[in-house]
Image 1 (cartoon, rainbow over the protein chains, first blue to last red):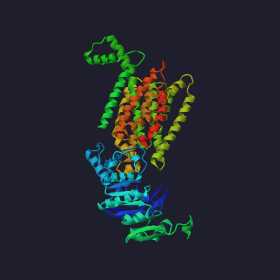
Image 2 (tube, rainbow over the protein chains, first blue to last red):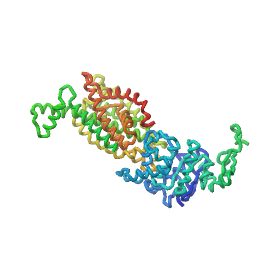
Image 3 (tube, rainbow over the protein chains, first blue to last red):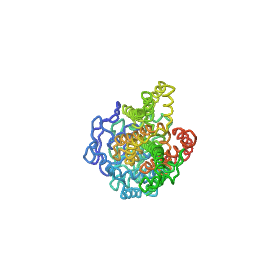
Image 4 (cartoon, rainbow over the protein chains, first blue to last red):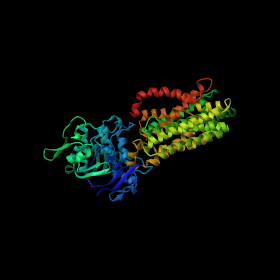
Length: 266
Length: 336
């Protein structure tokens, strides 16, 4: 058991966002978190990262150690956060952004070394974007930014990556490229937990799916067994069919696309 | 490598400008004479002692403190501006963001109202500058939510409060003696900069500058946003508060030396970013040197351009505003 959350109940001031959520992640898994907007996915991910102080009970353990009492630098060497690619305000070169991943390994007065630069370049090389190293982060495409942030997570030395909707805002080609990179990296032993709005992506690359609704876990199991028409209706309130193509490859297709307001009533 | 070249070049340029500025003024002193004076005071002198005494008075007691004051203020405002911009992830914020300048202005005006002694004005200005920032931070801490946004709102509240308090002081001030003093002071200028104040302020300003330089790698990470910084093991709350403390300290001290000098903290970090890019490890030292250079030159202009000295703050605004309008076209190069 790599990462484990037990009975997490969490809220902001008056509103409870998560109700008694428990889950566990094994090493090398790709786990997708599915659920409608506002169901608490992002909050859960940030709790797994140890960014929030739990205020209503529960505990998160990473490799058996309570995350809240693990020094943050040490935790950062094992778990990395890959946010949605963002429009940064300052045009740092790609290499500088990736180098920031070495920060958790540095004491206060230490500066980046030649070795750190090599690690950063290796990560860029592995994702085949080394040619971007001197380009300003603000001037590359969304897909390239997302890969840059993944390279930073790799440079951090972490083996567990927590992604918040990594495919959002990427064009179709880059979405597929991203999924391919996830598969490649997971073969090398990296573990991924990602939230997503695409059940298809979960079917294609995830070993396991955790479905969330209104702050609780609705279903948790193998992707092909958990992504069913019933569960998807429960999550999104729409009739969605699951089709099998070429043997095991599955896709989700809406049952019908009628005028607005129509499909949920039928 | 690139880093050292920039810093060495700017440092050289700054020394040059300081030397040239020493020659400028009503009483003509040539560059050669200054060099002669320096060598002679080092011991290997062949200078007429009467002449040396005149030079010592003009150079060491009048011109040097003023030039050093300009350099210190320029460096401090530029660095605190750059630090605020990175930590608030917004290239358009200035050192006044958390109300430090409003607080310090009120403090200075209050000092002139109740006492008029220069030391009281300075102490009061410094104290209220820090108090204003403390108020912003406290207001921000009262509420939950986005920390950056709350700090910004806290800054607006605190700035507005001290601006209205300043109006009260102006209203109460004696319109024939105190009010003009307050108004002139608010325009900012270095004619009151004396050697003792500059020497006294240079130590904490140096400390603050050094602290921000040390923390500059953290500024880079803070500019990626709180969650990312935390996920990379940075103690965001502590680092940000330390940076705010240093940036506030140095900008409050600039007000103590020279009153309100606007625009430097916005323009110079901006220009530096266009020159060397956004990496704070380089941007902060370059910004400091460039800020010092800029203000020394602008102060030369302000005391020489006309027969009467123009307040420095007016010149920095007059230079700064069209400059910002001009660079807006290129602005996205640094942060777009």
